[in-house]
Image 1 (cartoon, rainbow, N blue to C red):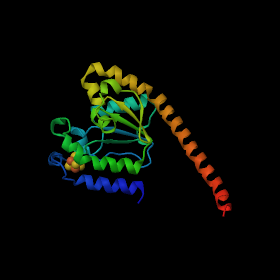
Image 2: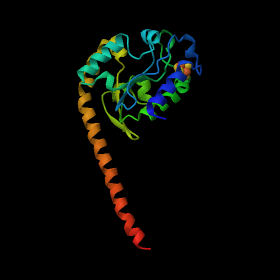
Image 3: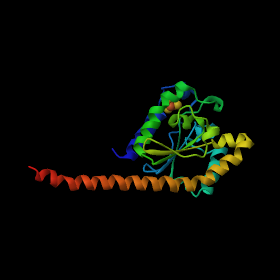
Image 4: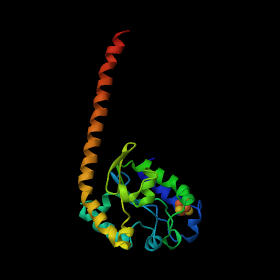
Length: 214
Ligand code: SF4
């Protein structure tokens, strides 16, 4: 099955999912959107009012701010996958509960596996804590780290920065650093890929010698 087919299948499952109580207030589920081969995945928290109405991620005020931040970083929204840790709207935009996060995680995991992004930008503490458990966003925001084979860059959630004026300069500054962080991650991944290629070539070169022993 192609990554596109996997994502489409997941979206279908999500649209009728009843694994947690968040489905009760769902008008439209928000599985996320973007290319199936996206290099960068942005992961937010959960749908808000407008997202629940439209079934698309980041379309309200926070979405407009995210568009502005992406433009500032030279990132085209159409080139990245944007999703959330929970796919249905928590009532009144409250924080998702641990059991809701746990119930929805298999969808996010399956999306990550299908897309296989090299870089994940987390928006807010819930998505950051999925990759870096127990971390404090006030300490880690704007700092990239390697988690498994991927690079994770924690950022404040754009909605938090809109509601708390004190966070706005920090999120603007972090997104201004994004182009440099993306270059750094790509360079490191290029080196790692070159290293794997070199090891494969060495392994291939070793084969005839091993065979000649017999
Ligand atoms: S939030 Fe996730 S787990 Fe809960 S009902 Fe929606 S899709 Fe299912």
